[in-house]
Image (cartoon, rainbow, N blue to C red; front, side, top):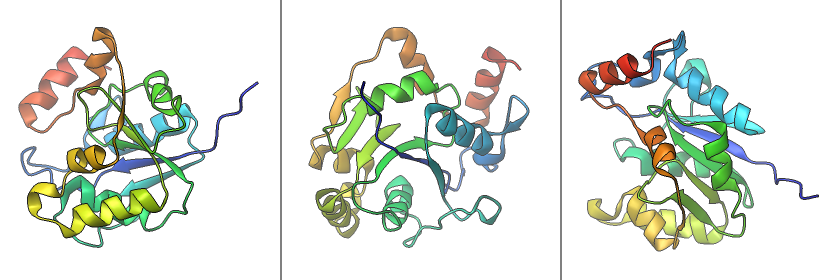
Length: 189
């Protein structure tokens, strides 16, 4: 019988939500804020700990050490606080259709440093070690075009997990009020 290695969940919730016009993390999803929903999802999927990336005192959030660098900046601030060999499953705050079963598919290929679904930057699984830390530091120090999750994943030769057409619908995220309204309409309480 195989025992799953303990892992830590991370919710990226430090964005400005400028296109939404209000804080996405606090939008109500089935009776609770999206941030609470995503934390609960990570716990349901088996996370031993759940960290929040972003300046959110009510959630013990980890503020970005270098502001305005997007998800990569948030990830860098979180990784600075975890030990090598920590396995992280990173989710965005605005992807409420994700399921614990889908996240478990990221954890299955445990030998890889970086695992993500095909054609998706998030969610992703990272096994923290010196190679990941150096790749992240290189991206952070580089030109703006290299400061992206895509560039980080490329440098880590991210392993891609196949998904079915029905699973692909879980990757819907919301950046505008129109997208949010559509998601709420299609997924009522």
